[in-house]
Image (tube, rainbow, N blue to C red; front, side, top):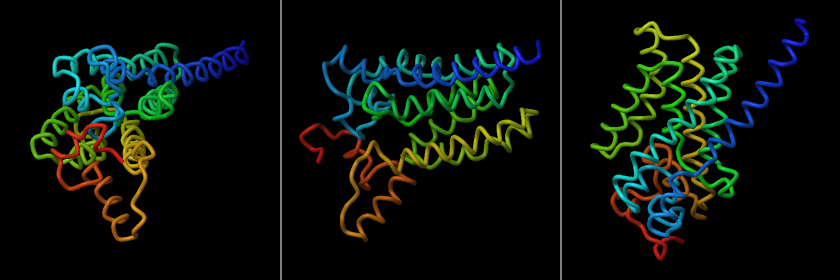
Length: 229
């Protein structure tokens, strides 16, 4: 009987990993752009299929349903993992699968967003206070045009978890999301780096700390197809 339970747990975990990735891959921002304005969001602004680009190039009100859906697709697999008794470690791995799906969606040739919305969904289940902290950091980062603030907030989540009696698993959740965020910023949906070594270093640093290739934020987010290389 114990062997059957163990086998069922493994099957459930693998199923949820696949489900999490495929659910995370559903490109709500891209679909909103197609359905509402008939545009391919990948050709606008930062080129990410994200809520910020929906706000900038589709319609501001659309950010609400898109954001809620993206949060839901991060929360659901994690909640299912806990409900099935797989434990917190398995649950956050399933959550990471959803975030990876959002960032590298199979439906869009692995050209996706930044993962913060599904990460909010994971936090909602594992550490609800983290949602408040991350939303505050995103708001402050938007005001000061500093994408490094949300990254620092992600890195500081274990401290808040310790202060607020959160689960120790938040440490690994924070570490995993930090790595995913930096990798995604550097990979930048396969946007090529400059050939000149000096320019390449500048762009790499801007991608990590500014989440863009150029210094000017407004010019970056307002780019249109004819301005893309």
